[in-house]
Image (cartoon, rainbow, N blue to C red; front, top):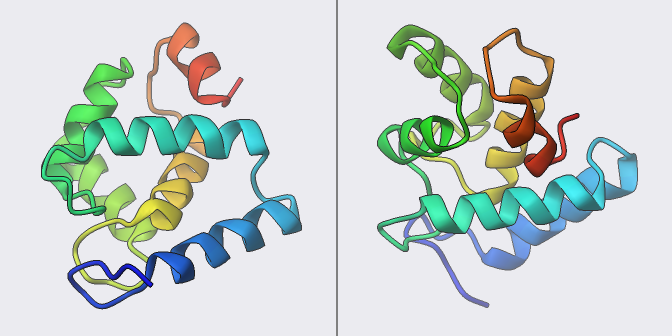
Length: 115
């Protein structure tokens, strides 16, 4: 099993994603789009996103987010409190953004599947 630097196996991350899909928490479309955005944003290629990478991804998606809002959203999505987001935590960030009033471009929301 491939491990990320914290030792969490990629199979564990995939199991958490499958649980989100099974529970109906996210759709397959949202997962597919989030995967693409996650991997494009992961400039360090360590399968984790830091705040800088998340900020850049949000900017590319047309979101204008303050440092304070980003810190709050990031902390809420960082379920294991390790200071970075794996893909399943990034899905949590997507869920938070879907429910938040942050300004985003409608076309970009449609791309990620947030409609």
